[in-house]
Image 1 (tube, helix red, strand yellow):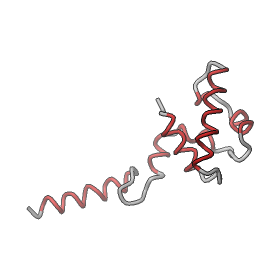
Image 2 (cartoon, rainbow, N blue to C red):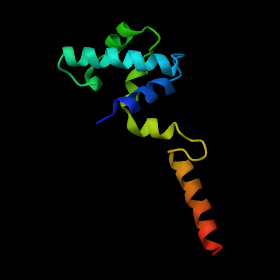
Image 3 (tube, helix red, strand yellow):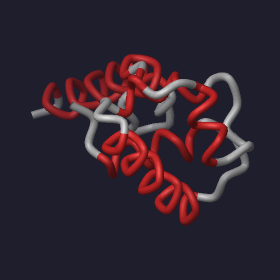
Length: 98
């Protein structure tokens, strides 16, 4: 299950121009809507997300694609496959020098 803090971060990562401080507020509205409709947030439609804020594009549902979300973090120390492999190589070099 996607934690709300993770969801907020993923929303901010979409590049919608919605600042992180606003995604927190918007996520609260999305949670309330999902609860009112007795649905999971991943069951809401694009139209429902855009009804909360027009800045969310057609890709808003991609926040529920966990693999994609992980791969967005490709900076050093990030969670993407390439970043993790880079960290492993650095660790191997460090341990190999002992």
